Image 1 (cartoon, rainbow, N blue to C red):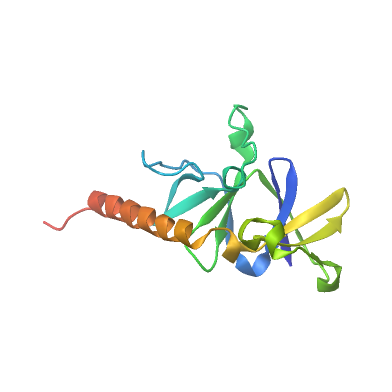
Image 2 (cartoon, rainbow, N blue to C red):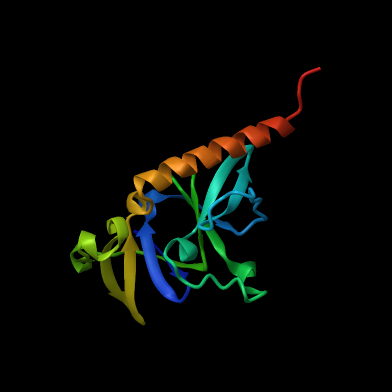
Length: 161
């Protein structure tokens, strides 16, 4: 099963097994020093979850100039790591035969983050490997940002008297 979504006019997908939850876009909070691909942080039951704007990460137009664009955007909360992906819109959940996937060479995309392509009605869809979205340095920086956000949330929790 694959979760198909749009991203700045492109159709992409990730494996359903990598998805913990699909969410409408809530209000995010931003730290003043966070890098552009980090759209902000989601407070999920007291846990600071960094939100990666995939359009910005991939250098695509993010639609911020369109005032209504953010109303219908979605978050894809990942299962293996406390990170959510900001996408234009989740479209569908599809079953797909593995033999219909056409592998993409690792060197064709940064860090080999697009692992395959497949065809659906209306064109090609890029299958993204979530474990290869970030370079190791980016992953470590994101962990540091998350720790700082967690510390900030902790400061707002009620202290025992």
